[in-house]
Amino acid sequence: MRIRFKPWARGELEASKFYIDNPEDYKGKWRELFANDKPLHIELGCGKGGFISQIAVYNPDINYIAIDLVDAMLGLAKRKVEEEYKMANREIDNIYLTRYDIERINNILSKEDRVERIYINFCNPWPRGKHRKKRLTHTRQLEKYKEFLVDGAKIFFKTDDDGLFNDSMNYFKETGYTIEKLTYDLESEVDFWDNIETEHEKMFKEQGIKIKALIARL
Image 1 (cartoon, rainbow, N blue to C red):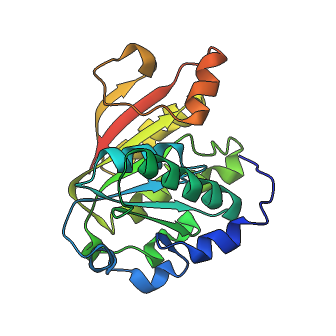
Image 2: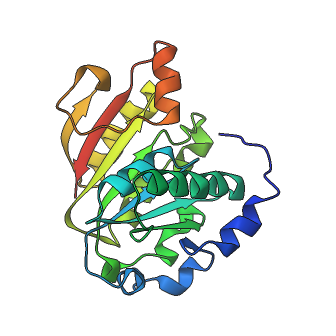
Image 3: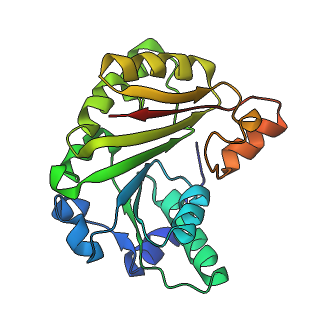
């Protein structure tokens, strides 16, 4: 998703107490940063923060890390987090945002971090063959996630793209993940999971595009 440059974003992020600009320094030490042993969940490609801000404020007993590569996105996510926690009259104490290239995620997370869940929402489908290795659900990435996920960890994946979804099912199977649930029409599956609708999700639904989703377990 392309977004205009936000000249204020870098300054606001650097001044924020819940933004980490040097995530490689925390590899294996994220639980020390949170200063507790609550379950750790991450979102890969948090965008404007609509999802992570809501799920984090609703679940104070879980710690969250949200990763994106674009300052403008993270700046908007930071403001969205502040807005949600203010409305809930809560201190921001269970979430960190960080800027990093997810293709190199093993440089910032390790087995010591004991990640229990990954969220991947509407990632770039990279439809052209030579670019498919960039998919966040590609076998190359799924193998990397194994390096920091605990046994039994789950990946929650949503997309509007049929090709990406069908390919991803194969990627998960090829890398030894078990697909516990899947649907080609998330809106019709009221008991599929406690869904938090993202900005993309609402847009696609208004266009009549069905949302595909799955839960895979390591």
